[in-house]
Length: 485
Image 1 (cartoon, helix red, strand yellow):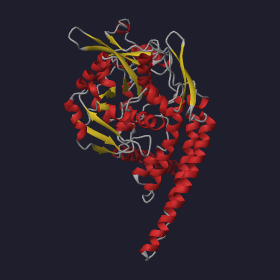
Image 2 (cartoon, rainbow, N blue to C red):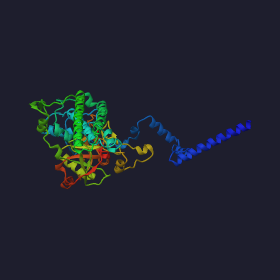
Image 3 (cartoon, rainbow, N blue to C red):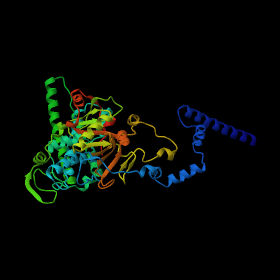
Image 4 (cartoon, helix red, strand yellow):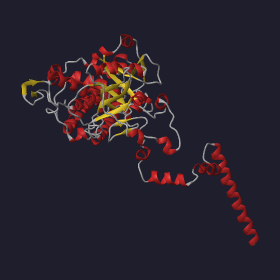
């Protein structure tokens, strides 16, 4: 009997081993990690004294502090041959409004220079209020117009995933200010929710998605009959009810925004002070009259949006569908150019004392405390015993890099031959970095700069002519859609 029991146990064990081996073989065939493969993988760690020392250092310290290239870090020069002067540093705080701060800062520098003002700010809160209302309408109207598509359609999926955000582009600055004007920061100051947008944005997103589903159901409740005229009447009645309901939804959004941001003024009094602090004049304004008197630029027709995207053909224009802040606004249309061409226009603008809207992948090789951006600043390869060899094109294709933050390009340092050595931007992170600015090397600029908005007068005719061609339309989920935060 014992022999029979032992034999049965041995059979079960052997069968189990064969089953595990079969499973490992099957998983290996399917691309899984088998036991044998795991044994090979574990050889990646040899446990030498050098490896253990690195492991101990990395597990108890930040990677950046260990990868800091000490020789390169010590060679910092803050001189710039050409620089646009500015007064006062803005702070977007815990919000994704860098696009708005950057756009307003470009205008602010001109206002300060032309009117001899001291430190001056436009109200970011005022423009942000209209941005959130207009984006809400853009989402709701887009849902209405695509209601016949199934929820599984990629366009519908994208709409509901991107119902509302606080990020944006320069096109939003141009459209919003053209429509609603601007006001000084003292007229509509920042609030807690404008400086800390996450909770407000989350709640608005929840409500908009709920509203979107309701509008889809209303729009699709149209039952067709054999009578063509009757069908037209039914459709017209449903469209009217949908429009009325959308208006009610926007009334709720407006009320919600007022509670979080305050109500935007329709008119106001404002006293202008010169650089010495002496009052110059006190006038009554509307946001539009203030914009016309102190800015006056046709934002929608004065600037050209440039891109350096090596994944797409250069010397062509592209349009990203739904890449706008307003339903009746403009999609972002840009000219894709080699980086050398963009640099020449940037230099011309700086030399003429004109700041520019600039965006980049700011998180790469950034020393936020000291305000430097340099591809050689951190030596990750030596620390990890490898290389990180993707070029700009490969990083874009794989999602490893993209435009993430907008700032105001204001300075360049040129060598004796007029070639750029480094660049400087005015940031919107308060006084962090180099006195509120970031300094980037020419190598970093070429690798991680993506977008630049330039006044047409600095753009050669051959580039302007590209805008006369019909742009290639790209889908909303194109990698270059990413909003700057």
